[in-house]
Image (cartoon, rainbow, N blue to C red; front, side):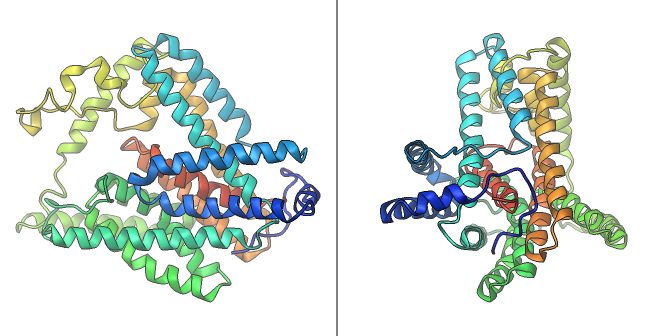
Length: 422
């Protein structure tokens, strides 16, 4: 997919890139390697086992890009509306680390957040360049291919392990991870696949996205993760509201209610009983209650940034300590809510700043969409905005801002932001 027309003053003029590419074939080859690296990192993001290799490749590409930019006297910083809230959030978390129950662990988690954020700025820096024509199309091709491979693997593995449609005792998962990762991947990619299928001018890319969509939906179904479907409902309603299709919103709300009634009826005859079991929701509510007690006790600086801080505070709720207990007596060994985790870890100011980042993401994408008359860019921006809503919803029920999932999220966001003037 090609970037849209010039619609914002945020990024700089392209003359500096012309200077870079005119400095010789070596420079052009170097920046081509950056673009190829972005495509490969996007594809590898679908496979969590490759994340550490992906990290090494990313930092090599980032450092080399900074060095070459310094030699060419080109400012690599791409200014966006996210800069101020991201800097404030990162600074506040860093300030609270000395008050953490385990400062070393919290500092390590803070470094991971910074590294993942840099993926966004690096990807946006590469995407806005003119040294590789149609680079967003290649990155989206990697998204389509990666989702097809991941969905196919998950479905085949699901069937091999004896998975059925009767109940969710066996659930499809991503390789070397689990069903929580798989459902989050689907929340991230299904809106993008739909956008590519309908707005891309590349026939083969549209065709591939059309094949990937049913595979992704089947993989989402086989994951049997209710939070993933809640995220899709939120995404569908967001799409309806942004496109002013009120009837679609009503259909989604009514259809969701009917599906819930159908599942309840099926459970009465022996199907999908585990699917409608509220045990995990009850466990989440119990864990959230404990977390809010810590927030009330430490509202300013929290008790330590990071998902594992909860079990450091309550080692009796670790997985090992709870072995042998009945499921009804267990407490989840983490907050299972990104926003409560941030508030408990670094205080209420941290979660307010974190929400500001997310609101800025969504509002800027909507603003760009409303400002462009380019249908391809408009469809792409709509897809990325829907992705943001789904990712927020998914993180309300679990902590999924981690590893290659967060890396893929930032790359998709960079694709949306790259439609602005470069």
